[in-house]
Amino acid sequence: MPPPRPPLAAEPPRVGPALAALREQRALSLDELSRRAGVSKSMLSQIERSQANPTVAVVWRLANALGVPLSELLDDAPRSEPPAITVVPAADTPTLGAADARCQLRILGPIELAGQFEWYELTLQAGASLESAGHEPGSREHLSALAGSIEIQSGEALARLKPGETARYAADRPHAIRNNGRGVAQALLVVLHAP
Image (tube, rainbow, N blue to C red; front, side, top):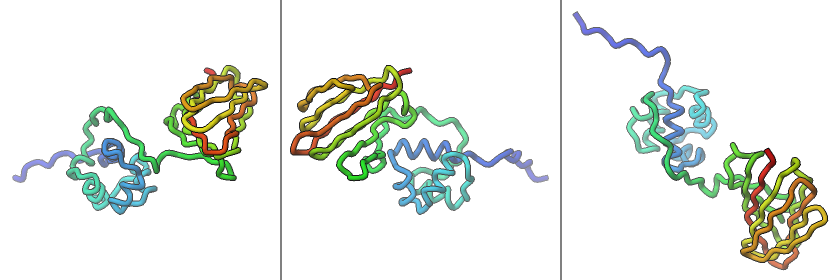
């Protein structure tokens, strides 16, 4: 009599959480893993969110691209703690820019904190300004000048910053950050939204 077969699993293995954890541990962007594995970025995103079940061939390509055995992607065992350090490649840092390209904001904070606590790297070309309507009551901004000459206006109040100086000001009224100098100005901008 043949040995009994193990019972079949009720559902396919969940590759998504394992794939996301391994990609994060290796500090790989979706673009980079897509290129290495020959799997589209949209398919990778769907797999990580458990919205698609990959074929064995796709799992094999992903395992090879990540340098792990196939079983590591198919294992439903709980994943280890997230890495102590996560590196976001420069190409994956979202950037906002004015239509005239004279003002650029690189979004340094994680998206899950947007609307509470945000931080940016701000670059202003000579003569450029970043003007904002007031945020919700009680909001504040902290701007640390890194290079160039920067002028801050919050309501009617004005201040000028030199590199190394920080301005803290109310952001619940119209406010502006201006580069009145001749060269490029750079700063780190932190926005604290009121609870």
